[in-house]
Image (tube, rainbow, N blue to C red; front, side):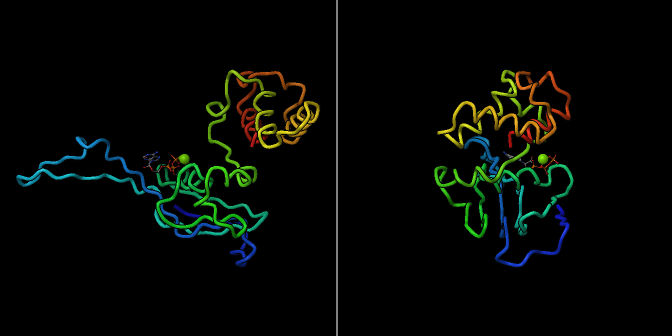
Length: 191
Ligand SMILES: Nc1ncnc2c1ncn2[C@@H]1O[C@H](COP(=O)(O)OP(=O)(O)OP(=O)(O)O)[C@@H](O)[C@H]1O
Ligand SMILES: [Mg+2]
């Protein structure tokens, strides 16, 4: 896995996101019976782990675009998922604006979830086919602003649609009624 950046390494203290020696291994041993092996006349128990992310460190400054590049299966998606807290890391630290977020409870993570969003690889799989664009885009707005009025929600949904270049008059359409590129932009609007 290779990491590339558009600017020199940012000064410490100005980091938006920093990863220090992050490790994520998956235990794929299965149940106890799957783990048992018969070797040299003895029954032994073996655990199998996938070392998806092994000791990754980097820092990103505000406004910087940072890419992680590597062959299929080298751990890029696992790294992204671990960074935003979908998986807990086995080792290492993840800091958002100098504050550790890898050891926070789900409740304590809520303010950070508003600020860190994932745009998924396949928008057709990540958009709910039974929900209109309006329903899909309203959900995060209301979740993060429980006191917001109906008019404000509608205005915010129209605003994000315009920002990503999808006409707000299509707000009542379903994902299959858009092109692949438009669906990708709706995913970005949701994020
Ligand atoms: N939940 C999981 N449980 C067990 N192993 C997993 C899990 N998720 C990913 N892996 C394994 O971890 C390794 C890294 O997978 P990952 O999805 O991070 O790769 P990737 O770099 O995103 O690949 P691609 O470019 O194909 O999307 C792979 O060997 C994969 O099989
Ligand atoms: Mg991937």
